[in-house]
Length: 96
Ligand SMILES: [Zn+2]
Image 1 (cartoon, rainbow, N blue to C red):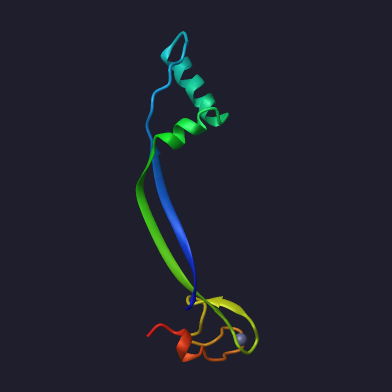
Image 2 (cartoon, rainbow, N blue to C red):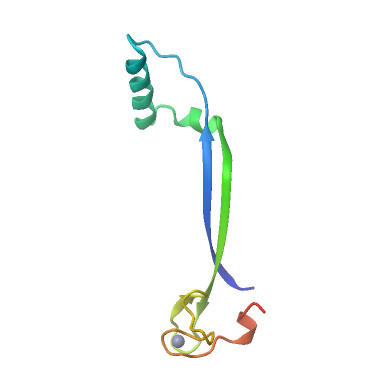
């Protein structure tokens, strides 16, 4: 097994109605907005949420056997070595 960091990018949309007493459209919308930002509708948001987009991006992680430096596949040298001490990454850790 090899080590990876996976960046998750999940877009969630939530649509629902709340009953509000107010004197105008603007006041009703402002009250609703305040309820959202005061976390009064967190349960409704969760109950009505659906994932509308999802992205996953895995990056392989390495630890140098020579100097113990932690680095990612994007930081390794062009010759697939530790960027700090230039020790090559062992073949069994590479994905070819
Ligand atoms: Zn190293």
